[in-house]
Image (cartoon, rainbow, N blue to C red):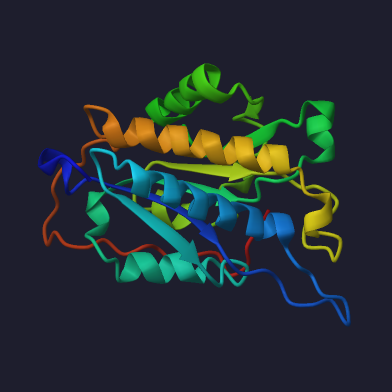
Length: 231
């Protein structure tokens, strides 16, 4: 970050690198889930490196998400910075397809952004209306809150936003290949995540609500993640 006054207010943006095991002899490449989100994080990191924000940004690529959110759980159990100084988590987990419910609109789902503070949901909607104008659905997939790495941040009271393709027919199937990705959508959702991160990084006030101090303050530890990732 560029501003010493907010040098200890970290933004986390992440994605998981892993995919599920082959189904018999069929390889499952996981182009949308989650090569798309991983590529988005890398592109955003490159852009931020060229022009830093006031607040520092942690770029994270986790493994073992499909095994129960294990990579992000480990990250938060031994974080490189105090977990109580992470102000927000943006999670890109599948950003290159649209499911049947989205229809021809190619609407993308944003999960959990209003659960810790409604301010994050409002910020994402405002940035999207100004900069990207991609159709977003903040409500339909709220039942997927436990389904990806952002959940480990959420249980610590950290505001999160989970950008998610929903349940297209290619999800966890051998047909999730790069030839059938919606690359315009990957680009636009990545651009939206960058613009949201820029707004969070440069705004005057942290997005994370203040918390009353507790005894024995220190790095918080996430609760046990679900044994099985549910989407």
